[in-house]
Length: 462
Image (cartoon, rainbow, N blue to C red; front, side):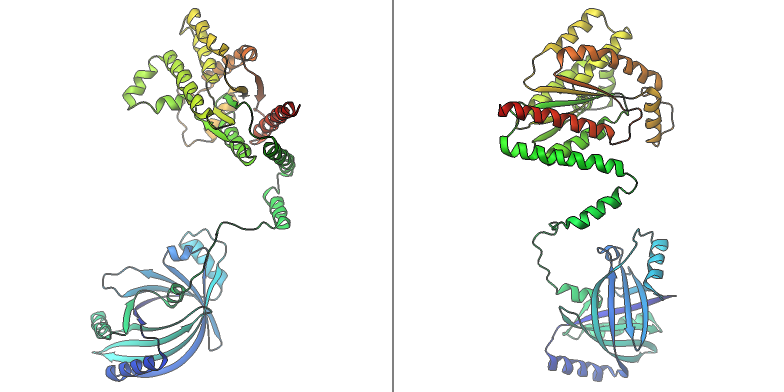
């Protein structure tokens, strides 16, 4: 059931008991208020992390004279400074929540008790120039506070007369016009000291129950992650005992488009950071080059010479790695500088460059780097790559660059480069993710890198 309330509210500024009584009696006499009744009730206000407050909604349960009902009020903006509220009544909190979900599209499953108020109310009425106005004097008491307020409610008649009457009320200096309700007035006075709102002691038993819920249909994945987590704790212990890695490790995740490279980078970054290793990510070299361009025209000009573009990626990628080596133990590269060699091979096989320039570029692989190079090549079939591309995009248009034929050409160059990489890179792993679940490659690489880091610490102890 919907009702519209039009009212003005006033805070009573002087809180001394006898003085309040005197002021209210003065007001009743001067205005000629007609007494109706004295009543008392208890209000319980609900919210869910102040979501309702953000929508200017108030949910209340009122117990009065043996009756119990739930109310939803929505504040409306107005130009005349009075408060206009849409009011709906419900027989249960569950019914009210369903109404919020349906009519306000609020994604909430429950509401929690936020505040209890006991209210004593004196109700009066006045006929002002034919306009009926109700005056309520309220004393509300919560566990933390006591407040006094006056509520002036329009019942029927002329709204302009209602506004004129409120000008009289404003002339009383012990009344302060407000737009709050009783709940907000009581909240205003409550001070809740907070030391660290995000710090919470973990209940291990509850935590384990939650894990079982989170992985209800993925128990096999949970077991893999539990084993990996134990290894991470072991890494953390080694790091604490023996200090930082003597030589940084640069990990490059390269391979077929949509093979899961970015997911791996994100997961590995979190894993090693939580193992207390100083870890950083290096953006894809193509993105670093694009970031130096001013506009689309510069990009179009750059792409006219695709071979030069790849050489520029190698140069800017190496610069970025040198910059981030300072102070970090593990660098995670999305594609990274090694990926440039795959593109170079692809362009060579397409006849876009001569053999001497190709071999000259490959000489860059023989450079000695001041870090350990770990390369993980994630491979997936061209068809799987296209499945993933279309099924994770809002675009159904034909792909000009990212298409099945170009992915096939890239994959061929990728496979051809593996023996070349093996001669020059410290460690290389080729991983076919075609039939992998989303987390499989991340788990495999995290375990492999953990093996290698543990081996480095073992050598140091010798």
